[in-house]
Length: 397
Image 1: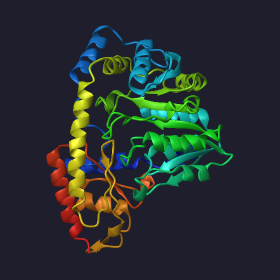
Image 2 (image 1 turned 30 degrees about the vertical axis):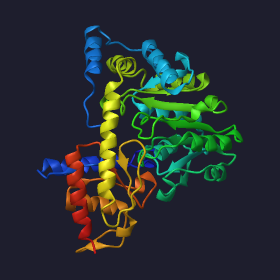
Image 3 (image 1 turned 135 degrees about the vertical axis):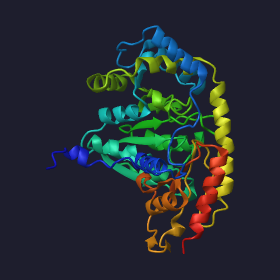
Image 4 (image 1 turned 90 degrees about the horizontal axis):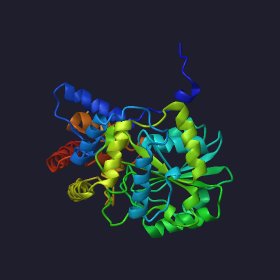
């Protein structure tokens, strides 16, 4: 007897978490699996951040915080936005949540009515369309292939906008592709949006600091977009704090108040100790952020070089984040024994079982011709993983 809600039944399970689960099961059986499926840094949280958390426990930061987070943390975020991004906000325009994932979902839930359209450029992070469905909105997928570096053009955006369009979700640097929008490219999108004042932008900038082309650019920098943009960011990726669960939004005060109202009814403020740790992340030394960025850049160069040597892979050079998203459709229709590869999801499962390397098929990212590999792992793992992948793919005929 299925008594689950239609809302729940309309959602797809997270493919990235499902692949992670499968690789963990194989590992538990003693199989040496190299996991390229997870989207988290393999570094430890920097020591000064951990010390701040320990001090917060000793100082009894153990009670409810204000729903949008402690004023000290929100003020630290205000300073971060000013110093790093040249953007002026007040503490009342910041709301902290249990990770950037909740921040994105809060913004969608307060903006989208049933039947509203939300433009989601593909490839997209798996949760965006599902969150739109949760809000009873309609995801409008705009696809950008590897030949355009997985970035949508102003023309594509213009043709996707209708009177029902409410939101554009923009992720730069991108999960799953690592693509980064330049200032010029964002200006082109902003020029289109200027003609459609009803469209808000949710700018997911969680990978801001994992950037290999210089300065991060935000669409909120354009004067006509500032009041129409919700910046989403957090400490997970830049400071290796995925499990601490602190994200935030910065946006117009009316929208932030709405998110506080929503969050006040279903989670309240995020973890008090994590907030003090996040405050230390933003106010303390930024040296570890740069050290990690340099390590990721070295690994990016390594995996691109190795993947370009895999026959049948089409590889671009990601400019940020820690993912490679090769096109692998040349393997569709090939087989090994009675096992046939029809989709990138089939290929990911084949690589897990045959090569013992966990990747994620591109279907749930809106890019069925590609496969996602995370290079947030050691150089040795990257070298061995690509060696195994190359060997396994060569067996397909």
